[in-house]
Image: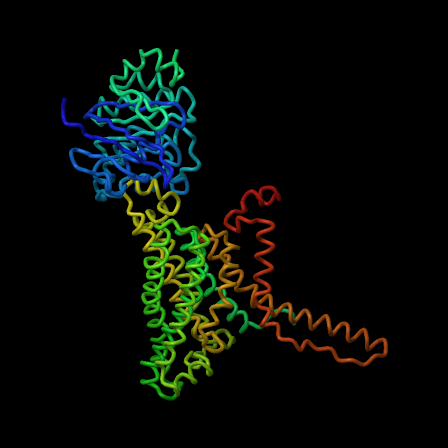
Length: 239
Length: 353
């Protein structure tokens, strides 16, 4: 197998003194959709935050493209091509759509930023008509589109999505997951997807990680986890 | 006559402008660190001290005796003082943030601890300012402290109103700085990133924004605004004393709370209104009180009692009473401040729109 784009080794992390993630290790390879599933409170979101540098890391290491990034601050990781889309508060409500996109291209030169914004507006044309609207006035689906657009505009090598379909209508959620597949298939972006809808996520994913109580309960092909009746029934509510 | 004189109205507007700028600064630092900075008024007094030192070191040298024909030279002071004070006090505020608040916050100190830290910084700064005054030669010191700095102010008569140049300049400086700040926050990439960092620092970091740098610049700007307004305010202070800070801090907090503590534009309006309330409100109350006593006196005279009733108490010392009443009412009625009130909704409900 190739060298992993992202390698997490024996990671222990949490918030202050409250440990949430225990001894977690896994590799993510280029151009795959790596799905992280697990029951509520199993530490999926904290794991993504830890990778991005938003929690306290007690021990373990994270390397990106062979470089140790464990202690790098988030803004440096973002500049290296790692993108993270939080589950909530993933847009700036008080800024306009245009300003949100401007912030997403913060690290780019002006001309490059303009071209990239044009590109994502072609993918999400509904945002073009709302450029001067404050993000708080958008619908839930439009907000998620804006959040995804803000992530894509930076052309990251790897993108970490934390429950992007949460609180969305089923039709909108389905559409959004299709767009996630497009990221890999058409744009060659590696995706780490944390998703509550385990079946939908495992069906589209290449490999998967099952987390239970902050620990890894399974790591392997996504299809195999989907077909594992015991794990599916016990932890994912699948029948 | 219940209303104040035009001269006093000009003074009120100038005072409101100073407060507006100070409230903008306090609100900005509160939005960034979520800690009320009790040293903010002393930062303004530091700005006033810059004016004092400019006069002592440069302008006394140029004009040992006040000369009315030297107006042009005095005018340079109005521009030199606020610009110099902006940078000097900006750096002092930066020191407060970088050397005191940020290290404490990183060690997990809570809001109460940080608030006390701003009080400690305030006391240190106050003592430094008091000690600094000893550098001023004694003969100049008494002149600067007892004879107000407005001795250096240029008298101006505009539309029949006798006032001074500094009082006319202050509202203009306030408007210019507020507009400049608005342009910076809405038209520049760094300004928008500052608003983004204030609203959601984690998301800002996710996007590659250096949040620490944005916060540092906010503190510098807040200090700079305090310094510039303090430098011009020096001309309006009756006599220069570092402890004046302990009075005006009440007004600054009142204006910021009235504005909502979460909106720079709210702070601008809140500060200005508090300034007007403390000055115009005071005069109107005093005049109304006198008129009431006059009526009472006439009534008593009609009853055959000859008495003379006059307001002998100067209400100036109760100036902050008005701001504190406004704060209490505001917290009871609309705790989110002016910025949180849906004025359009109110107008629509009242059938005005």
